[in-house]
Every structure is written in C-alpha cells, then in structure tokens.
Image 1: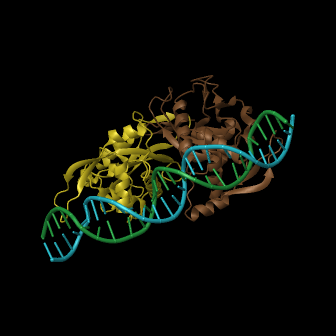
Image 2: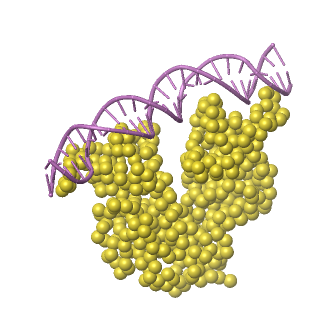
Image 3: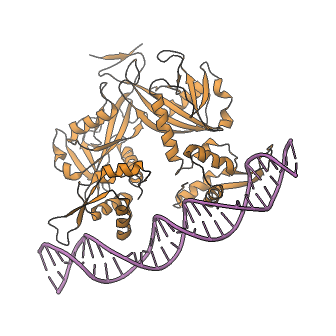
Length: 228
Length: 228
DNA sequence: CCAAAAGTGTTTCACGTACACCCATGC
DNA sequence: GCATGGGTGTACGTGAAACACTTTTGG
C-alpha cells in the first residue's frame, strides 16, 4: 500500500536527546542497525505517524528504542536542512529529555537495538546531523537550567544539597560556592527538608531534601522567579 | 503528477508571526481567500518545498504574501496537534519575525491577498490554531527581549532613547524609570551617539543613537552579557 | 510664555560574592 | 585518630531602584 499526494512532501521524524546525570552529564544513544550510518551511534528517534502528536511520537520512540518512559520532555528545535539525510528529505523535530538515572540505569540495553549512555565529554561521532542537534540541546540545557527548576528532573526524588550543587557545577561548567549556593536555594522556599539523611556513606551523612513542585508553582503564581 | 510514499506523511508548513512596533506592538496578518476559514485573518505561511530549508520557506512565504523582505527571523516552535487543520494532518514550523515598520508600512496591501497590521491588543479571531501560535510568539518575544538585543530590530536605524524605552515598556508591559533606563543602556557601551537630533518635533529635539552591532558582538566575545 | 518632551545625579537598600573553620561518621 | 565530606556566618562592594527639577524647542 502506498500514499499519494499532489505535491512532494518531506518525511517527518522526531529525535530525542536524553540527558541523565551520573558522575558527569550523560546522553542516551542507540547504535544504528541499518544503513545509512549502519553501526554508528545516533539519537533515538523515528518517523511521526498520522495519528499521534509530535510529543506522543517522541515518547513512543523513546519507549520502543530505549525502554525509558517517565521523563521530562520538551521540544527543542526543528532541523530541516536539505541534505541532512542522504536518502531523501527528512525534517526532524528534536526534543530533549531529562531522566533520573536511578530509574533507568539498567534498561539501557533492553530492546533489539543496542542502547548506551555516553558522557557528553566523550562522545563518538554521531549519524546524520545528530552532533549538531546534541550541541543545541546542550546549549538549551545550560541556558534553561538557570531560570527553570529543571535540574531536579535529573536527580532522584530525595537528594542532598551537595548532589544538587554538583549537578549545577557540571551543567554550568563552573564551580559554585557551597555556602552561597545553599543560602540561595534554601531561601527560595521550595526545598522540603525531609529530616532524613543519606545511608551507607563513609563520612558524615548529609540531609535529604525533595523538590516541592506544588510549592514552587504557588510561589511562581505569586510572582516569584527562579534563578540561579 | 502525484508523489507516492510507502507510509503516510503529514503535510509540512511554515507560519510566521511578524511583529512591528508603532504606537503599540503590531502583527502582520493576511486574510484567507480560500476554505477552510475563508475570509478569516491568519498568519502568513504555506507549505515547505523539497528544495528549500525551513528558514528559506519562511522567507519565501513572507515575501510572496506580504512583500516583507529584510527582517530578523527566528524559529519559534513546531505545532503538530492532530486536528489543527480540518482538511488533513498538517505540521507547521512557526517562526517569528521582527521588522522595522518604517520600512514596511506601505507594502501591507501589495499582493493579491489582503494583508494588514493589527495591534496585539485588538486582534480578530484567527484561522486554525494561529491564536495559540501568536500567544507563544508573544511570550517568546517578551522573554527574549530582556536578554538579547532584538528590540533594535523593531526600531529604525536611528532612534531616540525615549523610543527605545517606549518599546521596552510596551513589550514588557510595565513602566520603566527614565533615568535608570538611560544610565543602564548607555553604560552597556554599544549605543553610538550620532550627534544628530530628530527633526520636525514640536518640542525639544532628542539625540539620535544607533545600535552598534559590531561593538555588541565584540563585547559579547569578551564575556559581556546583555540584560535589561 | 506655554506646552511638551529631553536630559541629568544622588541616596538607599538588597543581593551577590568572597572567604575558613568545626562537625559528624565510618573505617 | 584520621580521612572525608557536611554544615555554618559575616563583611564588602556592586548594582538596582526610587526620586524631581531644569533645559530646550516650537507654536
């Protein structure tokens, strides 16, 4: 069965840049099992179906290819350069996603295709223009993390202030002052002190906090503006 | 002649939100001369051809439908909801553009189609989901104008500080202090004092300035960050 | 001379930044 | 008891915000 149209149409795809935080910032890639770029690492993605929105397509492809399901997902940019796919004209709506690595560490190699996490500091050359897409995603993450509380999407539900600080230092690529950092994030008033401490550490255990999203939204309504 | 594909494809379009600054913030619309939404006002736009990038498609449609040519153009967001076009599935890559009204005041009604400027405070109900696209564009403009020097794209090459301030007051929807505003923008060091004054005004003539883009880029390289 | 907008400085306060030491815990 | 990271307060300086009067020009 084929589909015919009066005018030529580009194919429409979605591609996802999935970030996770470990010792450093990681990206989830899959190895292509068909030409073109067979064997090369690429962003998870695929073609958009007629009965699903772009967001739905992105979530479906992620689920199918990597098993990753619950995540923060946001549209990034649409890439439409003429020669970006050597087979034919393909326009790709890129998304970036943030996941808690604690939830997804194992699932990386579930499906038929090989999937793996790579440090953003040590990436292989990617298929298509996926290098470029990844750079745009990184720039967006760096920019957005400062004025939207999206960093918490990369952390487990309970985290220490040191873990939060380390996340910001990694994403922003600069050291932050411990006392000033704590003063600032605590003064914002949306971190709930859980009165628990981390377990099994070989030093003084740190207090655990959680991001109180409800409280954050209340504050935002009152005119509060997150910034770090 | 028709084009056939193995899988169904959505149609791919571009739509443009063109902003201009007069007494208030204006948007350029065209009246649809065919169904669906015949007679309704809509954003200029059209389908993407296979031999042009998305940016090129946006510029071509703008030129064809409104005569507007030299402008600041930036991709906004891609809209892909299922029922957004009643005929069939259409995914639309939206752009927003900033033009100097001084250049384009006349051309509004050139082409076959009727084109006109509307105040953003007094808009008609638009075709498709164009109301939504316009709201997203407005939000983007409001956000971006504060940390990127895009406001100058809305002003003539020579402008007064009062005109610049009024622009910011309109976009940000709040009054600004005259002395603080002047102090701040002048201290940034990319406004060139032209040693000229405006003509034909019924009061004391104000000095004219221009945005020194080269200087701005130098400063940016040195780590300077625009913010207002 | 009147109307209309241009242009100009100082004070105050909040917040960002820099900085060093003691504490708790596991081994 | 020692190594490791956790946790805490103050002083200083910069920059944002508030604020009112004089100047210039055309009509």
